[in-house]
Every structure is written in C-alpha cells, then in structure tokens.
Length: 186
Image 1 (cartoon, rainbow, N blue to C red):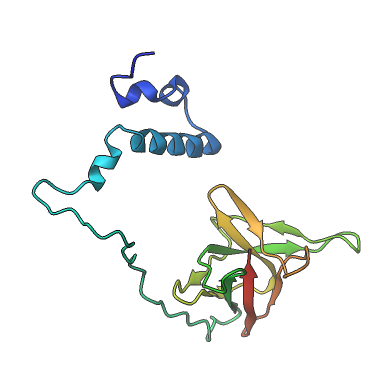
Image 2: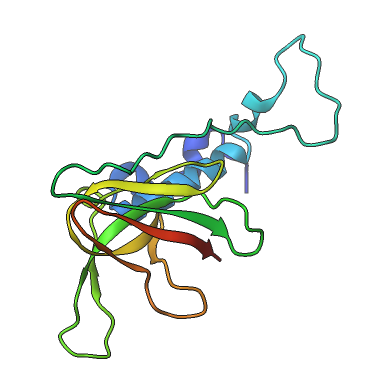
C-alpha cells in the first residue's frame, strides 16, 4: 500500500461527510490528534527553530503551574449555601485537580436504595479549585442535597466515600458552609 500523499487521505469519509454526534466528535478529535502526531507536521512545531540551539539536558524541565487561586466560600449570598473541601490522590496524597460539579440527589422511593442523581453541565454548580493544594469550593449553592461529581469529557464519576460504594452527599443549607474535609481519589 502506497503512503498517503496528504493528511486528509488518512481521515475516514464519515468524518468529512456527516454531521458528528458528541461521541463521534470525541473519537474524531482523538483520531485527528493521532494522525497529526504520527507525521503530518504536528511534531515539527516541537522542533527547535532554525538557528536555535537544541536543549541537551536529559532531565525533565519543570512544568509551570497556575498560581494558587483564592477560594473564598465564607459568605454565600442570602438564601444560599457553600461547599468546600480538598481532593487528594489516594496513592500519593498530592493535590488531585479535577472538574467538579454538584448534582442534585433525589431521594429513593424505597428504603435501602441509593439516591438518583440529576446532573447538567449547563445548570449545576461547578467548583473553583486551587491546583496547588487541591482545595475546592462551590459558592452560592441553592439549598438541597447534592452529590459530588468528577466530570471528564469521556464520562462522569460520582465520588464515593473511601472503602464504600456510597456516594459523597452534602446537605447544603442557606447561610452555611458545608466542609467535606479531605477526599481521597483513586
């Protein structure tokens, strides 16, 4: 088989011809990234500029991290509450940086069953997080019972209490700050 003459030759027809569903869009994005890095010019941007001296150090260079951000959840708006806590990686105890949301917990109709969680990226509270410490905060949250959700482009995960299958639930009350303490994530 002859090598393709351009990057577009590597892109399947369904990508060029059809409207993309959200799942197909993620698959397509990953495919295009792989194609680019596989030799269609994507790695050239990582090469030193002409005339520049290449770096000869074999040790990894430090990656700049965002400055710590202030998480002030101490004074929620009238009729609202706040939630705070810290996420750490279970195996290293280092800050765990993630996109967190609060999803409404709907009580079960029958005892002994877990609550149903209602969640929307567009309307549910999203946390601010300090990447240097893992501290997070939700400010001005409507009163109610919520579950802590770890969001990612490929799926969401309810955060569970360590050693159990129980979701971390928080009762938000007007005028109060609920402290979830330190939560370890696997």
